[in-house]
Image 1 (spheres, rainbow, N blue to C red):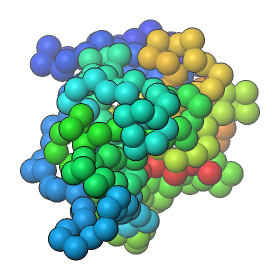
Image 2 (cartoon, helix red, strand yellow):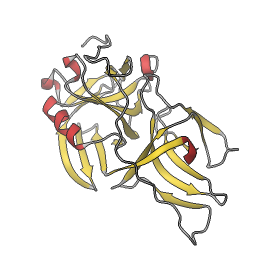
Image 3 (tube, one colour):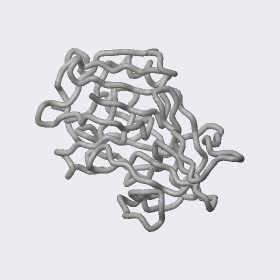
Length: 259
């Protein structure tokens, strides 16, 4: 079993400390974003409140949290608070959320239904548009099947990448559910994680006392002979040539489905 000692970056430009993520130490850093796009919303003549989807099987949207905000059970400032979203994660990275739906209210306020990076897994909440930055569009979706130990990336609903993977052992399972890619991680000195790693919103339900709260990662490996298999503390491992190819095809904000 590999050491769980956090590794260190080669460059001081990387902003954050190392964190143990679902059985693997990951270094996370701020995400570079592309030009922003406006999310769909109701136009003239649309009745309010107007609700519209922002994540489908082919196209999704995400945004960075630009100010601390309460995520609520319903799109209302008087609704029950589900969680509080900070502008940065515990590892000093930009905090981003996947947008599931939008609601334009009669008073002109827009709320977004977002997927939350909290336990229990698959939690969601509503936040006002004013707490988020530009909305970005993504056309990819990563699917991981724990039974067949396979990962498939689809773009616009069409498979563009597939590979065998290693997933969590029965007592450290990779959680099932709907998640999203939070970080793309590079420039670290530890061959155990391969050349590239992605941080996700999925969390281990059994390793919650680990630094960072037990977040699950998708990364390479220095033991390709173990793949496929039930081999990890919950993280999703793939061979280094596969994670390198995936890194060229998948961006942050990509939805992740684990079955």
